[in-house]
Length: 420
Image 1 (tube, rainbow, N blue to C red):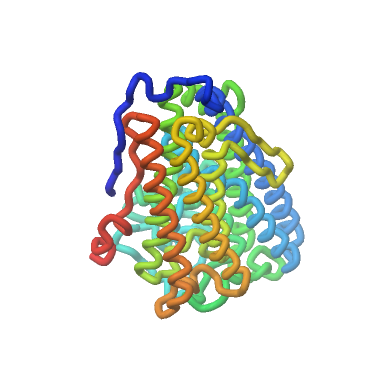
Image 2 (cartoon, rainbow, N blue to C red):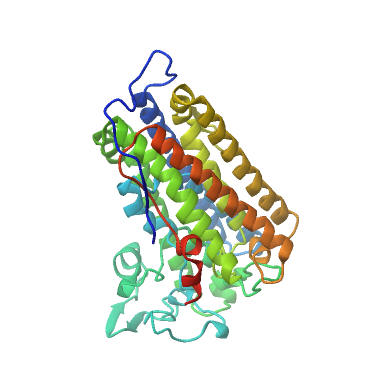
């Protein structure tokens, strides 16, 4: 992957003059407050999701399944807005794989369609089917899975065999359980798992008791993992301390690293352009639920949150304060105007994508081969992200920050490699 580096630190780069609207220390404090509120909301909505799942598992009706699915979609909104904290904050990036690892080889977890296949050269656990097998044997390894516990999932099966696609924890594992595989390709439709997959009295799919056990365990684990990060961003928490230890310049560099890396390499490249190049519905972030348009939009909103220093909470825990935008407006008003215009243009491009999805064409249909109009909508979103990243690069230089590196992506930097 290509890393982009900009600028060298100068001792006077962030000298605060009377004209400066915000001190860096205030900006970093507010940045931490936004993280605290965002992760607290992620935790609260995950607990609401757990309540809906518990109700469904106690009474496995189609109506209760739909309620659990709706709760999952609501829970995604605040969490996805935290992703601007990943890159630059090592404590977040090291943790993120517990809750949002993607893509996943769902055959490790449960039954799959015959088209999925039975094995993979890259992954000995590709079709191990935890729910059907109380003992898993793969790659010369035997794992006792007679009881599906949080420890089994987190300590033994997550990234089993050192394969990143072996994902059994987090939002996407819960998503797969609630929706099942999306077998529609680039045609209309999401996953359609029946409620009876969780009904031991009227069981479909086999092993309903173990499926219930797994869904309870993975949901409880999601909550405990979110509790960890919510605590890390509380006053005196580990993430706050890690940020403070970097100093003011290091802290501002962290904000820009998160903005640029999510904007360019992660979102524009790995999550969007790759799937568009391949016209592949498997390269869809919330692929079981067809919620990808919202996942991407919330990433864009999250970038804006940390730049403008403002968070609109779905639970009323709004935060607003000193921002990087304030610092830039005092130092280089023209660039501040440019940055705002680029961020607004990106938001508008993703709102178009959202409107198209809500109008009946899901994201996986938009990236489908031969859908020129849908492809153009997605490409416009990529172009806007790349364009705004160029302005973020200029912000890094104007502020004189040291060794800021943005994540790259072969999908953007070397598209030919995608097809090799």
